[in-house]
Length: 197
Image 1: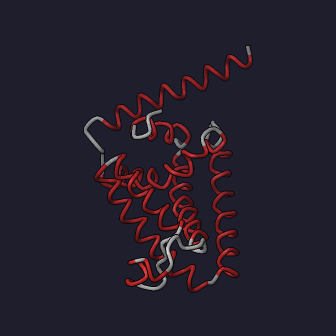
Image 2 (image 1 turned 90 degrees about the vertical axis):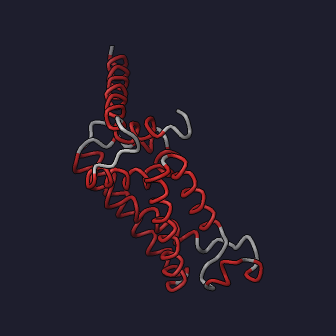
């Protein structure tokens, strides 16, 4: 699977998220999972001392640490996948990093990790129920953890953009993705039949 092949990645995601109830659950849970992870990453050590980073001159709560690096990585990667939607999501997650930094700073580590743990457990339970009750195929985390961790925040927003304003990265994108989804489904159905024959 090509690293920047949006069609392939989105088709992989949609193969596992076809039921509207499961899609709705993921729209609700994926972004809180991402932003609570940023809250936890706020407590990683700074890469530079506060006097050496421009972020601290803007506001002392901003720290050049692993949370900031993850935010920049995700933003750049999403923009590489699709410049329009990816840039929109990059700005959105950057604002989420700002918000999560303030939340983490105000909560402190002793309370923040409990909030993060509770939120993540509730969200992951919801995701498991969504896949277990509404989809034919188990969650993709069992097949491709990196895809789930990196791609899903972008794809839930892309899903919202498509359903609300009919956004397509380029003409014919939806048609090509549907064809790949059908091919993916046929492939795993064929594999399932071979196991039983």
